[in-house]
Image (tube, rainbow, N blue to C red; front, side, top):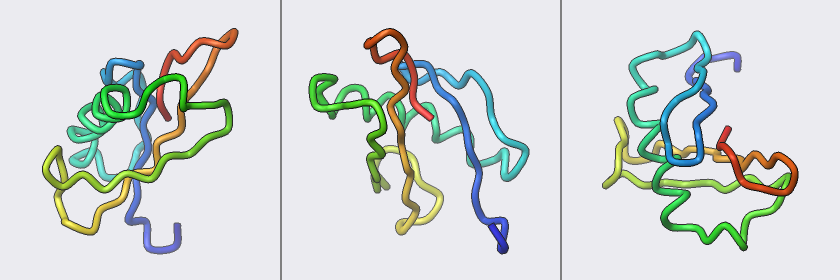
Length: 84
């Protein structure tokens, strides 16, 4: 956090952004794509409450090749509803 080179968002399961943090809003455009890619590429049966998936998908949406997204599935009543 010291460098401030990070940002955060909450996405619906299909990828649409619900809320975003105040830092680096220009990066948020790729967040929906990464959430959507996680939903498409990782079977929901493999996701569990408390998981964090690290994604590096420069072909999907990246400003820098080494960008890494930490995607955490969010469950409500046992159902996958969003990604943080």
